Length: 281
Image (spheres, rainbow, N blue to C red):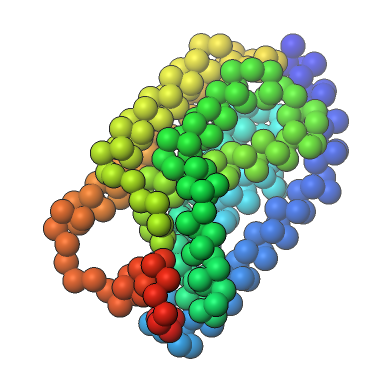
């Protein structure tokens, strides 16, 4: 069974070859745009925090490592590597990129007219629906159950379009879920800490149960030892990243109950979100 699976995977690697360059180009473009936006913003406003450069750079690197280079090729052969890639692409990468506040940086860089157009888009009903914590949790955890609980995982190993769409979904859903739990960007549709905490508990439970299911019953074509190791990686690796998310969430909740001085930047962000006719920061 294993050899049969490996044979098909090798033919899949050949088809992956050219596609491995695309994530590299996207990552380099994203890094370039982020650095340019920070440089442009720094000419007029307060210096962009150093830790956000680090979060964005490492977050993009984690995401890119999951879908290009040796790990991506290994992941096509070995479920353990695939699960490591899942942690990088769907959890750690999105968390770090959310902490780098790319939307806030974009708003600082844009002219007032375009910043207001973006904030109008943020207020729209479609974005309200997709960025709501419950919707984001369903997309994120529900998507994982669909991938590993049906035959979708096997299909994505042989179909480039499905393979690409699944990876895009894993990253986008992980980013949406993280951004809907901790607020590091302007968000006109903020929900209560109680709702988000309850959503987080259910989502984490769904992730944990799925990892146990994979441990006991790996997806079709996956050897039992690889499935068990992959399930353990998903369970304990996911818990480690979730602990960071929970810490940040609790810190934000604590600070909301003990407000201190409001920074100039946060005042300006609020002004942009409300659409007040002021200049940028």
